[in-house]
Image 1 (cartoon, rainbow, N blue to C red):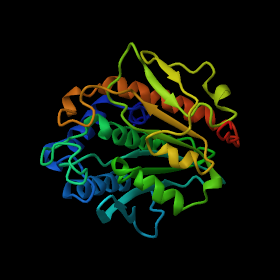
Image 2 (image 1 turned 135 degrees about the horizontal axis):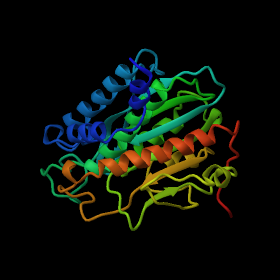
Image 3 (image 1 turned 90 degrees about the vertical axis):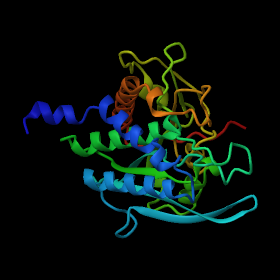
Length: 297
């Protein structure tokens, strides 16, 4: 393969993003519900992609971290995280993550959503999984060996109370104090030019202002929010002393409705958001350690 083609392969690609979301948010997967067949199919799909990209397993020979949890009257609900590891022989590791589950046919939500209807969850969070896979591709295929390892995680059970990240942070497969930072992508597929993309966690590391300084991406506007806490999986890492970044393009009328479908995805803008993410990740790697900042009392 000539150098230009190889370089092109590492750049986030709108066509690939759309293809991933088309599959994950198809009726075939019935909304990727936790403890539903479609959710298991989605986990296997992510594991296959990790394997194709050449990521290693970190849980023995498995890409999975299985767990169960209770939610209201529902007991021992099965779910799993999917993990792929890029070992660069470094002392510290960057975690890049997104949750793959959605509401499915809403059976576990005690009537909060229309039961039996497929909630495809294209933006929430097939968009984030597409981002996860594109960033994995970028760092696997990048010819430069990075000074950090990468752990890519697709979390299960997020919609039922951040269950996958709660389980992982209680049962980490590598020490949390060796995590440089955690980047979480949840709903990054509906870019609104007026709003821009929100990036949370800006107050979670002393070095974030220096990392963000002068970072720009053509066609992508962004703003920062200090909070490390939040209603997505970065929250559990922040509560365990890990600096975080959280990418989110904002709410919309299709949120948690059966109408959150793949054709509404802004794939070109998502590719730009991921290029912005690569700039921030690369700049964060110029600091050997990021110093965690907890909540101000």
